[in-house]
Image 1 (cartoon, rainbow, N blue to C red):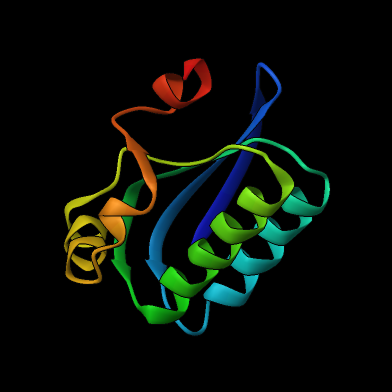
Image 2 (cartoon, rainbow, N blue to C red):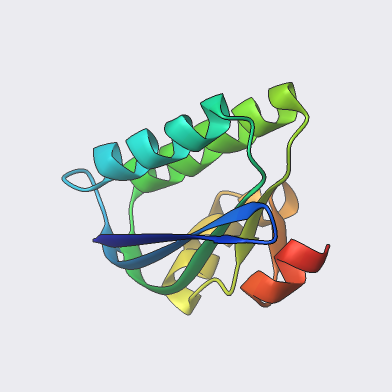
Length: 108
């Protein structure tokens, strides 16, 4: 997994690529928690994620919960088909705010 971070109009955008699995999810969790502690609006670009397991989903859920507690925005953008299937199976597609593009998340 690779994580690229950039700031867009005050929102932090994390672009993930590759597999988000047990061996990589701690790095994702660390990056997300640091941003949550800064109380930053966050959008996670999942367009290049080829695989996600429960540990990756758990990191996203934890960040979502912290964002709600902090009153900040947490959005998933451009989710790939493998990620979409996992979110739908867990019914988390009804929990997360999901948009088509990073730009839409920043404007929203």
